[in-house]
Length: 195
Image (cartoon, rainbow, N blue to C red; front, side, top):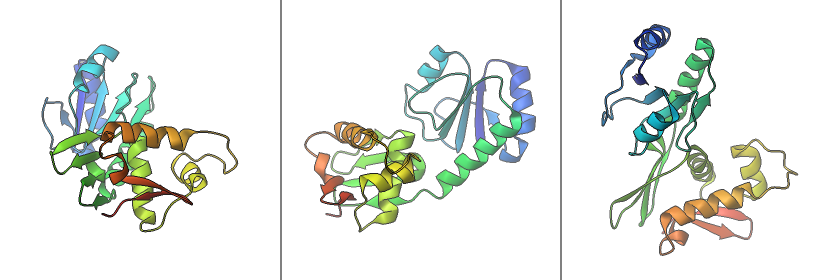
């Protein structure tokens, strides 16, 4: 099921008709049963909606937010939107989970939970993709080149600090005390910690 947030009732009806296969409903705050949330409103309203954690996949039409899974500019093709919803649902349904003594990662929710305190850490789309890539390789470590090509679709010879930047940001979210309890550096690259 998907939820749609827009002030324009005609646009809501158009989207509902185009996406009827996904059982669309009007957005209801704090509603967590939907798999995908589509937002088409001002940047201010988008920021307001996403100021609280959202468990759904997020598609933004005409706005930007770091939590978004997909951002489409307006006007957009309804066929393209339909395809993006399908891809996002498929991606979320097939997202693996990972657990060690310190953390629980729930891929479908893009959520990392610190078990001792039950602190929930919301991950961005790329942080989630990075962790999922590491889960699929586990218990083997993954090189920077493999992450660049597998997660970001960069060429193997790209000169970039994208991987290091995202891992640093993820460690900052986790906090210094637990930073090495989830992803660790190895001589070959990066590895999820199974403690």
